[in-house]
Length: 186
Image 1 (cartoon, rainbow, N blue to C red):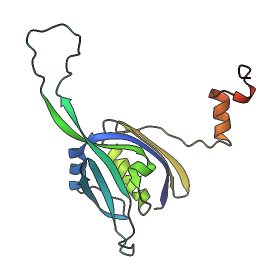
Image 2: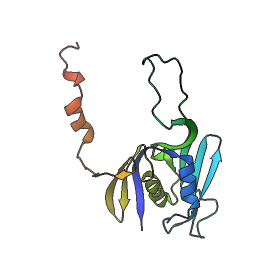
Image 3: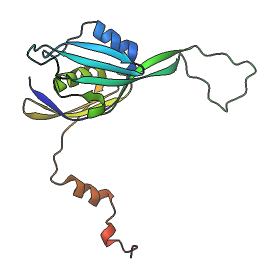
Image 4: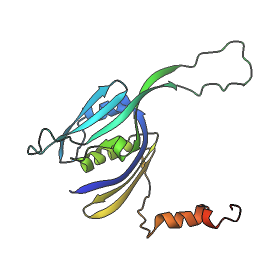
């Protein structure tokens, strides 16, 4: 299978524990990827592709997914809103700190390096289907055909690729101001 990633934007957030369990559970990886190694450096999680092809030089950087790791307090029930009725005794709502892997940004931020980039995108797409929060949008070339991907909160959504002759001109006509012909500017 051949492919290439042209555009990618991600706002995915999912518990770090879910990501780790996914890779410990021996997931179905694309045939070009033998394994994915997880490395944590401070507040950064790096998922690096290990090539199945032994002819790929050990000095060639393979594709990697990069996520920031943040701690978020998760409550078992909705916390009370500030400014509500005053209560004499405040009951503490049970909560815990959960680490989240946040795959946020564009292609170069989330999906780095070109060797095995498309197979690693397929791994990211599988991760997006597990995420309860965030979106993944992408335009990829798969077997000489452009395909759009859109996953919102773990569910595949319809997506399409639209090719326009001159996108900047049509967008300016719809939304922009023609500064050259503006009667208020002298």
